Image (tube, rainbow, N blue to C red; front, side, top):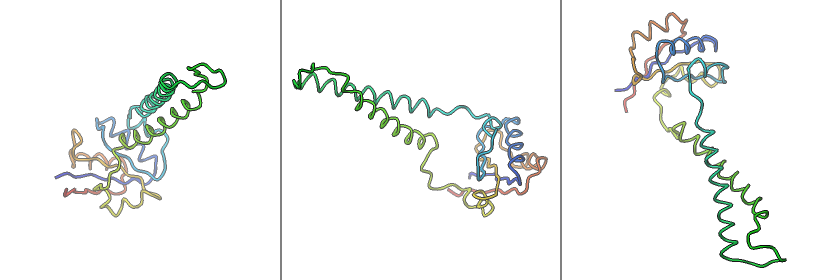
Length: 175
């Protein structure tokens, strides 16, 4: 059976301090929740840079190559002599090539974001908590899954007690 230890803090500063403390203690896969982005949270959690930029770059390059290749193949295999233009008139390929690059970049950004965020996620045991509803307006939370390396409920409760936690809840997942 899986469980999540959910700790609520009263201010974003206390949440940031708790995230730094957890990272210093060796925890790596916990989640922080707040109604707005908190400056410095990525550094406090020691998060790596996102791979999404590289995914978008690869998608854009694929669109660029696909658009240019398709037009090149069509112009060479189905030649049309119009106004004395050469068969391979690459200058006319630029608008379509650019648009396909943008289209492939956009699709790779959206689907890459879904994949990296593991979406759609229709169920999360943390939604069972009545306290967690405050996260959309004025709540600041840290959730630690029991699958985390070094997870010890009592040790974490003692650690959070030193960090001026407002409320601690253990959510058990039946699934």
